[in-house]
Length: 272
Image 1 (cartoon, helix red, strand yellow):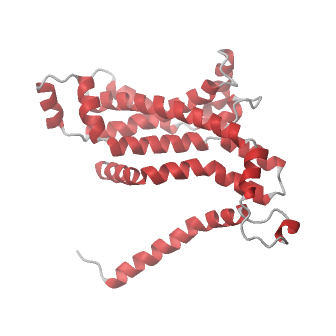
Image 2 (cartoon, one colour):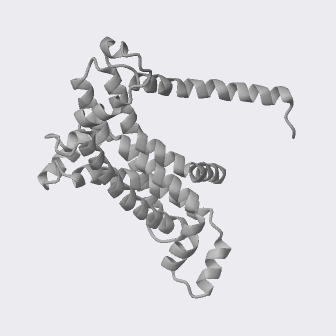
Image 3 (cartoon, one colour):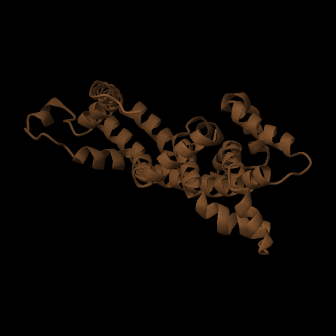
């Protein structure tokens, strides 16, 4: 069914309007980030003040916070995605006693909000000496990411070609060989989409690092930005520069993985 020129034009107008709504705040923050910090600096006549990023990086100690965020994000992504692939493969392709129970147990992990368990979790972590450590910040996010990741990967594996799996097993391939040499390469869009979502959620997490590191020794980039904001309540240029620095890794990763991300989301929508 072909669309008329009027319908195509209306679609483009709607897309442009929503793009402006989404990108408008980003443009405002970028304008503030490269703007003058004060009236005296504005008298210099320069349009762009790129030194704001350097000053925000140094004064806000973002090098330390970025390193902590990268460390936590890598731990969460590697462990959670690997465990999600294994759990999703088991629940999506194998029939065993208790599989339905375990699947709904994973779903429960998606539905329970962080605020509901963060206080008892803090005392549990403190009792085993994991507060104020990288693992204390990473472990809760690993568990939360596995809950969604298992649901996501189960959906993919359940829609995989049964004939291809059976053919591989007839050729003598074991379960792990079928997984890593057949299903994982084919499911790259779904896996990379899960990687991007897990990284984004972990990078932007605020509550868990705040509670699990009360002395601030394991302070991630979003948490560091909040304390930076408290220190520079009037420095809007430096605040905007810091916000861009914190958001930049997620944007860069999305740019590199956007094709796989869109493909994975579309495949997931069709399979659902």
